[in-house]
Length: 80
Image 1: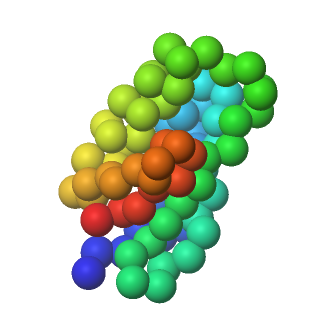
Image 2: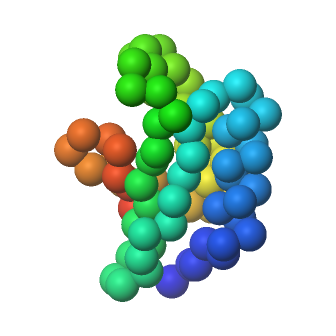
């Protein structure tokens, strides 16, 4: 099983910030598979900003050879 490091989560947050997106990723746990949650800095982020975030996450974690699986409301995701 591949494991994402805390350093890689920090790098992801810098990557997101560099794209001008006001979100932060938090590592939740690693029991079974690693899970993360998305913190939005603004309650009223547009759907376009969320879509840009999802693209950025796919790009960043794709380079690390992870696939993402999102929860129902897409504020939680698992690294596969």
